[in-house]
Image 1 (cartoon, helix red, strand yellow):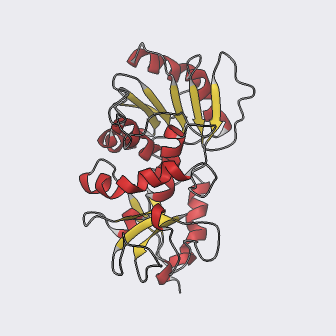
Image 2: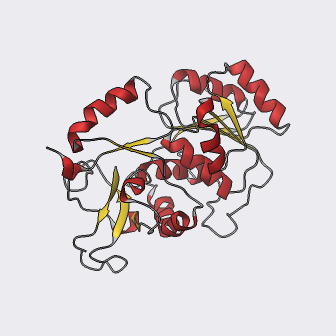
Length: 282
């Protein structure tokens, strides 16, 4: 799903890109559009140029993470909180003074969610993470970083000590059963909980809304949000409004993926995105 590289050829009618451009884009689960290969086909409206200040490896961390964050926040139907996107008229800074909670701020999706929340004006922006990621997440826009090991009662108390306003939106970028439980308990009545995995919290009560977002632009209904995002992504990255994830490059090209998945399974990756260069495959 995450593509980044150099344009080798453009299709008929494509005018925004030319041979030699460095680009990032959204892949798909097909042989022609997948990312685990040296050459692939990208969809122009889901592609953006990479600014000179961003490496190809950094750019490869952007697509799926930022799309999942954006769709979860700005989709207007059953896949998002229905907020006004910052690239839409009146959207930038619209939610100033309103609190925002994101669980798992050091995940790829969490890091992009923090940055989009800041662009939308939310404050305070409260997130959970391992303490060693505090400075990193504050640099992205988090105003408060709470220890991810706090239980639900302690976390709820900590959030209440930061803001007396209701937590109307909670984004759980981890969405395992235990984090969903915590997120749901933090959520105020009539609020919206955004998940990246299917819900395990049961039937919502107190007017709460629980939804499962999907980060692919190829899911029906996601196209408009993603196209709007990509139309602004180059400028966001160039200005630093959106910063790519921190990167760790795995050696051996595609052969490095299995080891990387093992580290992820063992929770040994924190605050960085694992990236491979397919052309380095032995």
